[in-house]
Amino acid sequence: MNEAELLAVVEEKITLFNEKVKEDSDFAEIIGTSDRTVSISISDGDNYVCELKDGVLSPVKKSDDTVTSDISLESDFETIGAILNNEMSPMKAYVKQKLSVNASFRDLMLLRQLLS
Image (cartoon, rainbow, N blue to C red; front, side, top):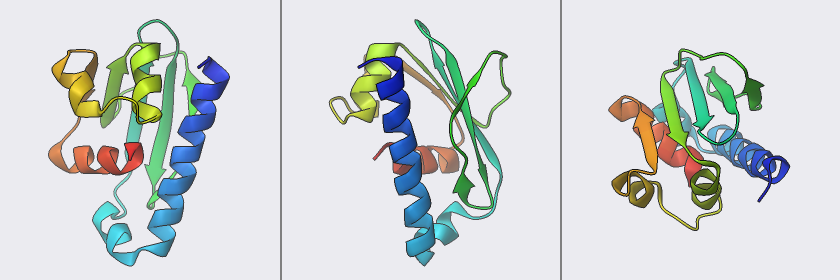
């Protein structure tokens, strides 16, 4: 998986997440209207960020700066790709210390929905 393919998978996950918010009122209520910033730092690649605003995730964009975020993921390119392709669970990556996550419990539930 190259960078373009990885970003395509991330965009697909964002689209599915946004569709679920529109179609599932219970899910939309759980997500709420809290604004959140999600950052993905890839140790052997670039940094990316997207924002949740009014229950909608924005497209992911490259970030050159260290972004202050509510939800941050740090990993290597291979692990992020495996998680996004459902080849490795986020929990397995975390236990193997291949994934670092900084988020509140509520934000972890949001992240779980995004990665599923």
